[in-house]
View (cartoon, rainbow, N blue to C red):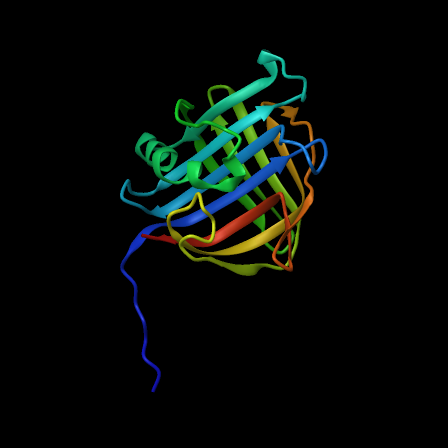
Length: 199
């Protein structure tokens, strides 16, 4: 008889979806979105969206967004200090002083085709959409496999062939590019669902 294994060293669980929009495949992104829906963590549960964007790709100060939107400040602070900075997708950004602002969250869609996260803020509505979703695959990241991440990760990845970021009616410049994880087809935009990080 096979034995049932249990684990109690859970750091956090939930969702951690990403959008990186670029002008071309080999340049730094003009928009980086890190979206977190947390079911369990030492800070409890809640949402946080880290939004870094040069909306028009011009470098003008008035076109830039650099903020985290959340429905629980404690969650946003914990993710900022523990999680998001370890992700290779955010290696080009220092998030230690990112502004933390309030937002209300809602989701709609179907992981068989497209998924949208909506955030209502005092600055307007934010809309993040992952579309032309590919079949999911399970990603397991052992400790040390990614030098910046000191944790073990188990998640389900849905690569998106297209993604759109709209901030208060303004569509962010750039597009999604294909990527690979080993031999697995991947993307610079993806849903990461059923995600668990282990201590």
